[in-house]
Structures are given as C-alpha cells and as structure tokens.
Length: 605
Image 1 (cartoon, rainbow, N blue to C red):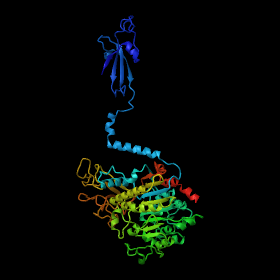
Image 2: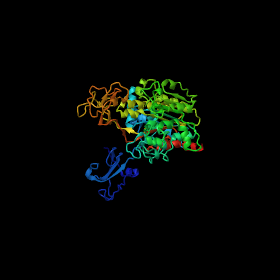
Image 3: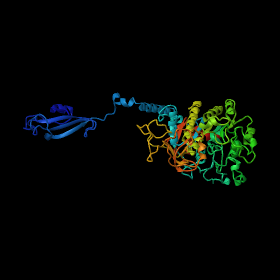
Image 4: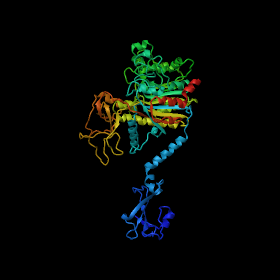
C-alpha cells in the first residue's frame, strides 16, 4: 500500500476531495485557524478490493493529532473511494494461453465459417433445384456420437475430435419423433410425417391418423400427398434408395398408401383387404405412375426414375422357376397371385434397366439411363460389414447414391431423392453396435459423396433419423479408449471393474437379446439364433471390439427396441437455415417443400 500526503491545493486541482483553507484563523485546523495539521492520505487499491473491484484510490482525511505526519487509523474522519472503470480489453500477452490453444483456434475458425454461411443464405421460396433427404433409420444421437468416435479411431485418431460428414453441415436442430398414438414411434408413422408434413399413427403408411390400422376400408379419403409425389407432378426426376427392402416402412412412405406397413406383397394382405380393393406395397411401387395419375385428374407424370434396394421376394411369384441367380431361399418369391412384378415393370418401361447384382449395377450408364430398378437381395440388403459375403455382389450405399444422383441430374428441372440407411436400425435391434456404427459411417460416406456431386447453391441436403434406439454410452473411459472396448478409467491401463468385480463396456443396450460373443461374424442378425441372455457376463477374456460381439442388455426382449427421444436434423443448402431448434418431425416436409417450391411446381403443371 502506498500513502501520499497531499496539499490542499494539489487535491483541489485534482478534484478528488474538498480541502480546508490553510489560513491563520484557528488553532487545530477545524476552525480555519491553522490547517497544517489537517491531512489527506491517498491509498492505491488493487484489483479485487472489496470497495473497488477493478482497483482505484481510497482517500482518507482527518486531523494529525499526534503530529507524526501521517493519519493513523484513529485519526481518520472520512474515507472516499474513486474506483477505476472496468477493464474492457485484454492484451495479447494476457490472452496468449487461450489464443494459442488448438480448441480455441478451431472454435474461432468455426465461427468465421458460420458467419460466411449466414452471409450466403438464400431465403426465397423455390431456391432449391434439387432435394436429397437422407434417413439413418434408428440413428439416434448416441449412435451419431459413437459412430463419429468409431470412424475417427479407424482413421488412427483418438476419435472424439472426429466429425462425420453431416456433422459439418452448417445448420442443425432436433426432431420430436413420437407418433400420434405412441410415445415411442415406429418407422411407418415417422417417415409418413417427414414425407407428407402430417403426423400419423404407428404402423400405417401415407395416410393420416383417421385411419384404422389393418382396415383397408378406412384408407380412402385419408391418403396424404408426399414430397416425392409433388416432385413427380412438378416435372422433377425422383429416386428412392434403401439398404432395407424397398417395400419396408421408410421407403414405402415415399410412394404408398397402406393401412398396414406389413402389407408388402399380396400374401401379407388379409382376405378382407383384398376384397375391399387394397393393393400391396410392391404393387403400388410398380404402378406408381398410373396410381398417381388416377388420384389427380389431369396429372401426367413419368414415374420414378431410380429405385435401388432389397426385397425381391415381394415382387416375384412363389415359384422356384422365378428364383434369381443369387436366391438364398429354395423358393425366393412370396407372391401368391402368380405375378412377376419385375417383368411388369420392364413391360411398362421397355427403355428401363432392371438389375439384381453388382455387375449389372456397374454396367449402368448414368448419362444415357432413362430409369433403373435394382433389387439386390431377396430380403434386406447386406450389412455394410457383411456385404462382401453376398452371393452375386451388392453395391454400397455410397455407390447407389452416386449412381442415382448422376442419373437424376440429367433432368434440367431438378430432382428429389430419398436415401435410407436401413440397416443401422436392424443391427441395433440385434444388439450389435459394431454393425450399427459401421452402417452409420457408410451413411456418412454416402452423404459426403452427394455433397461432392451437387452444388450447395441449388441443392438442399437434409440428414436425419426416423427414431433412435435404447443404445447408451456410459462409464468414465479415458480419452481415446476404443468406443467398442471395455471401460478403462482416466490414468489407468486396465479395465475398470463394476461392483460385481467384472469389466464392462462403454456402449450397451437397455433391452434386447443381450450378451453374445460371435467373434468375427459380420452378420448382425446371427444373434437371433440364440435365446435372450440379458444381464451381466464376465468379459475378462472377451474381445468386445470384434464385429460379432453383441453388447449386454439389462432387460431381456426378443429384439432391442426403439427409443422415444429426439433425433438430430442436419442441413445444408438453400433454406437449410430453417432447420433449427426442437421441431415436430413433420416440419421436414415443409422445409423441403418450401425450399424447392414443390407445391408451386406441381400447381404449374
């Protein structure tokens, strides 16, 4: 502390305090007689002082009674404070620890990129020429997080710092996934909401909540119009891709109207539904063009240009004579009406190309192909990890996406494309995190390829999920610990032990088939060959990072279930900024419709 003795004149000039006159009309400075024993002390206060948090001066005044030339504490009559103004800037040296930090620099760069994105926003309706909707079926937030780490570690990184392709999109929000009648949803109701803008019940496709599931007679009058249908009417090219059966709930919601998601071919329909005139989902796909024209008088469309997926069995008669060369079952087809819908499609589109395997797919010329129909498996397509085991070979999701974009962009009016990674969901149902994460990474690859092939100035790309799964990331593993590995705590080298003295993994499931060690098995569905085995297992000697390891589950069920929490929405391109906050899932249709002005283009036709 520094103390200064100031003259009255100096203090008066400074304006800090009022001083008594040092005249000769007093004896002790209180009656203006002398004044020389009246003192003022100035004390410099440090930053953080209780009276001046930013530092300043404490000015004490009083009578130097003992004449020692300073004011003792008992001699102070008055104290005043002059506080410094708050600091509003820091020197570069004071900030050096922060500004040199890699996380600080990375975030600063992200802010600059975000500013550039905001400056280039398009806000006009119809700014998008093309729309691509990617669906990671069952890809909840925990799946995205784990897949990001999984991919990063496969690259040799610690993993947590990695980004999936769609994680780098400039806009994101959340989607509330519940169905009208269900807290935890299914894919039929959720995809109907995304494709039509209307939430509906569990298990129904392309119809509103006034439907009664399983009652064909309630379909009429409750049909909804989808984004793909509007695109068709508006003259855009259209495409559907799925690694699931192309008649499965998610892809079916783009083109079909059904009282039950399970009505994939005529053998699935109850007799009453057949009598009442309902058509199975495979039939509706092959006859999409005529069905749409019959629904809306005066409409003239040319049908879906690209269809890639699985589910051949629903298009073929239940007759061994119609088996494909890579059939897995002794009789591949399921249809009980004797119809070969692949032949009917070829007859309707003689210039189109039907393929069922990798060689035929590779031979497609994207510059000249008018339309293509690819059914690459009897049921669902292979898991990405298991794709090499397919009999006749299957294209990857990335390959199908690239082929579709190159065909669809031949239309100068633009296109609408839906791409589903359907087997993320199936691997989770089987309790196999490896399969789910591997397929999520492949979805990220497909999104990246789509971004490379399109112009962000005229193409809106949205990536989301229909719902999540009861898949968890827990424990306190150290940074860089294998995401599929056992938990190793910070500072440790050996797996942590739970209260039962056994190691445990970072990822697990709340319910499902539970623990199974199938080693290097890449078919996630192999777990269905075993009874549920919920609860704890001794993992000491188990390699939990193997493709065939199936995580522990708390509650035994015949299949792991969906979850009810919100899922992410990621967007890039015209009007992508409309993706923000927490939304009803149905908003996705409205964003796509506005971005491409699908209704306006349809009206113009």
